[in-house]
Amino acid sequence: MERIVTVVPEDGLHARPASKFVETANSFEADISLGRADDGDLVPAASMLAVTGLGVGHGEEVKLVAEGDDAEAALDALEEVLSTPEGDDE
Image (cartoon, rainbow, N blue to C red):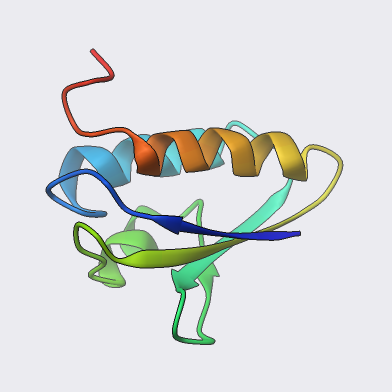
């Protein structure tokens, strides 16, 4: 299953937001990938280097793809991370 999500944190997928995203992705059994919504290239969501390497900024859309038993729960949790402005999670 897949989902398109707009990145809300001001820093995009860099620093703390990326760390929280990768940590969340690693908490699920599903195989999760992400990439820019307008690009077919996907990277592993469990890799901090791959996630930050995308260079996704605030307001950009990303595609999340998850396969496995908890894929829907994984997508829900990752969408929440990407949809929460930085500082609202503390």
